[in-house]
Amino acid sequence: MIGIVLVSHSEALANAAMDLALQMVHGARPPIRIAAGAAGGFGTDATAIASAIDDLATADGVLVITDLGSAILSASLALEIRSSTHQVVISDGPFVEATTAAVVGAAAGGSLADIAVDASNALSAKKTQDATGQGASSAEDNDPGSPVVSAEECLINPMGLHTRPASLLVQTAGEFSADIELTNTSSGRGPVNASSVIGLLSLGANKNDRIRIDASGPDAPQAVNAVKELVLQGFGELS
Image 1 (cartoon, rainbow, N blue to C red):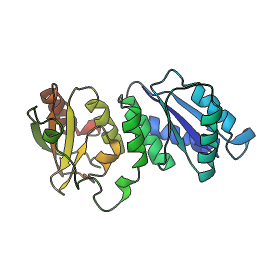
Image 2 (cartoon, one colour; image 1 turned 30 degrees about the vertical axis):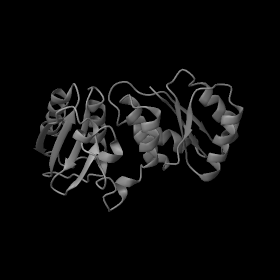
Image 3 (cartoon, rainbow, N blue to C red; image 1 turned 180 degrees about the vertical axis):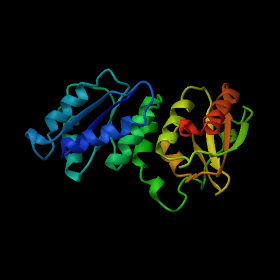
Image 4 (cartoon, helix red, strand yellow; image 1 turned 30 degrees about the horizontal axis):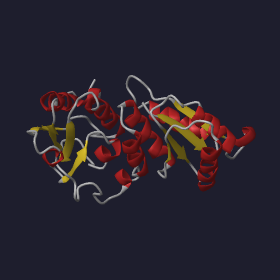
C-alpha cells in the first residue's frame, strides 16, 4: 500500500482533509503523515516534509499532496534532503479532492502511478463537460482475449453515485482480478474505470440513472455480481 504525505500551510486544514478522506474508506487505511504549519504557525517546512517521507520508507511509494504553490517548493526541497530512496511523486492535484482520491485509491491497493493520475485529475468530476467519455477504452479493448461480462442496473440510493458509494465501489473492485468499467447509459457518460473514484464521480449518476457494468479478466463474473449487488443494495444507504 502506498503512503501519503499531506503538506499544508495549516495543520488544521491538513487534519480536516485527512479526516474527510478517511470517512470514505472501509477497512484497512493507508499510512498518512502530515507536515503542516511551520514552527507551529502558518507555513511549510522542508525538513518536516522530508522526515514525513522518510517515515513512510516501508510503503510502496509515497504521494505528496500540497496546498498552496510555495508548499510545492518546500516538497521539492524535501526530496533533495531526505535520507530514504523509495519512489515519491509530488501531486499537482487540488488539495482536498486529491487527498480523497489518493486515500481511496491507496486503500483499494492501487499503484503509485495510477493514484497519482487520479489525484492529478481530481477536479474533473466538477466540470460540466464529460472529460472521461471521449476516447475511453472498453473492458474488451483492454483485454481482447478475455470475454466481457456485463450487467445493467438502476441506481436506487437517494443521492446516486456520490463520493461515499464511489469509494465503496473502488474498494470492492480492488478485490477482484478483473478490469471493471461503468457507463451511465442514461446520460451516455463513460465508460470509466471502476478503480478511479474521480472517474466514477464524473459519470454524474443520479438516482434512477441506469448503470452498465462491464468486466473482463479471470474474476469478471464475480466482479460484476459484486458491483451489481452494491447497486441493488443502494450502497447501504437505504436503511
